[in-house]
Length: 283
Length: 300
Image (cartoon, rainbow over the protein chains, first blue to last red):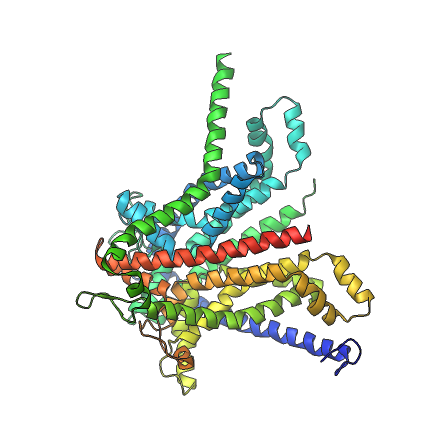
């Protein structure tokens, strides 16, 4: 209708209406999110008490311990591989078909459904390698899942180090690896750590990959004796309580959801703060 | 001399290790595909591909077992299409809003806020849907008697896929050279005309890629759909199917793998679903990546 000359409606009116609709869309997205998160924080915080957190049976204590062990081991597995890959991509690789293929692979790894990681972990670590349902099998599965995140954040951190710094080190006679280890890595470390915090947050909230690789609900001893023991993880406990245990009081469920969300969001906020303070730094 | 030599050798080893971890991504994708395929193959020996894909009955523990995956494929299709119909217009609106209209202070606040939505674990969304939203709808809406149905999964997935689509679309809009925007304004177009006729077409590939990645995210989502869509492996019928319980591919794996004997037909059938999921998401992500590369070339 709106041919070059005659408009049915004045374009300035159209613009006003369109912008108003965009504001509406914004509210439609943000309001329910804020509402539901606010409600959860309210219900969770009012259900939370020390007894619930510290109780070994029916409380949160085993899940908190389990998730802590799980995410730390995950980071321990993912960090060296992910940072190694990032160093390769930013320092060694020359543009070409191989790098193109590596990047495509990383993008695809990031897109593999988490339940498929669970299947892979079951087939590879639990059955083939023979670790059984264990802390180690779960951590390795989660490590693969967070690997793309570790690689991309570490690579970005490495790329932000100015070229002059590397050239200065090389000009002083340092080898390439010495330059990377003594000059590039220490300067990129805060950015790399930001990525690791985000990975830990992601791993802490994932349920599907640990369903068949690590999680048990009731254990006689919640503290694992070795990395070959199964554990209780927070998201799995929430899942089981929500779907299979109507007899458990709602307060316990809300408290579990609250602690999980607080942990994940808290880690994300820490990572965001670290990142924004670092961005202010100018070379 | 010895020391320097030892150092050179250790350096050589470290650099090889770095190269190996560099290409590990490729190896991992191949390994995942190989493990899924290896554990699915026995299934293809027992049933034909068309029996699996077009069979209308999924009932693995009944008699010999029925392994028709059509209800699950359709379940995933319903939930995903529903989610995208809700998410794409909203995400595009939010992306335009954040990129072009929001005042600076609001943008500084909105971007991290949207990122935080993406960080909320899917089991928590499932929990909220199962305990609060579903029962509330069942109580207040007459047409819905059970608070677990396909459309609820779609709505929740839409919100979960939103941040992915928003951030990629916003980047795409941001990457359009400012000259295009300014020239259009200089020619007398309003800001809205500039956005719809200059900015959006220029950012087209990035927007399509963002939607594809959102699609990938929605198909692969597991815990939320498992908890809120009702867990019923039935064939969804027509539009009414949105208001009835269904079961997606991902939810089937998550719900059944725990009780399955390793090496049984059922076990292999679940890996076959995983293989199909992997192939679908691989295709979607690769196409998205190709489109993004092309758009980067266009702008350069």
